[in-house]
Amino acid sequence: MATLHMICGLPGSGKTTLAKRLEHELPALRLTPDEWMSRIADNGYDEKKRAAIEAIQVEIALRSLQLGMHVILESGFWSRSERDELRLRVAAAGAETKLHFLDVPRDELSRRLALRNATQSPDTFRVDDGQLDLWWSCFEPPTPDELQ
View 1 (cartoon, rainbow, N blue to C red):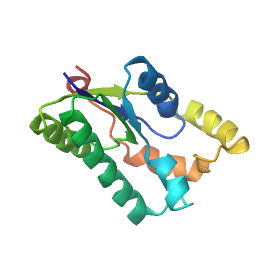
View 2 (cartoon, helix red, strand yellow; view 1 turned 90 degrees about the horizontal axis):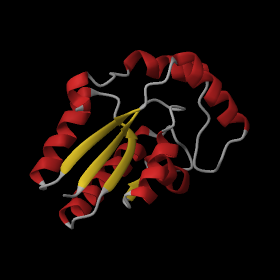
View 3 (spheres, rainbow, N blue to C red; view 1 turned 90 degrees about the vertical axis):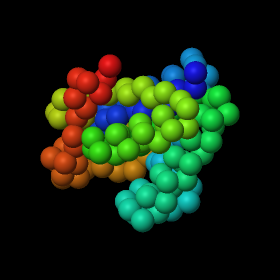
View 4 (cartoon, rainbow, N blue to C red; view 1 turned 30 degrees about the vertical axis):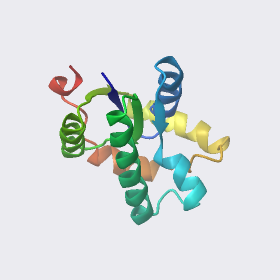
């Protein structure tokens, strides 16, 4: 059965690394908002454009699942409500979901982001410790029942 692989975690947790690996192992269609943001908005922090891109990617994912393809969404999925809503939509499309949670300690995220900022690729955006602190405070880690 077609499966939506939801990659959950904060910046620097390894979402892209995991998504690229799964893309080839499964194989699957990989959809990543940051890659589209860098090409369309040239600004990773434009929330209106990010919301539009994420909505389009969900539409593409749902249609691909209906066609029998595995899909990877690398959107971070920071809230339980966002994850639950997408699970319902995927089930209605006749597919399954699997949540991949990358649980990385705060100090390690900071270390990884400093390295990423120093060697920034075209598809990533600078994240400083202030932004990470803000995002850390609003992130809702998945509960054990979500990871089954």
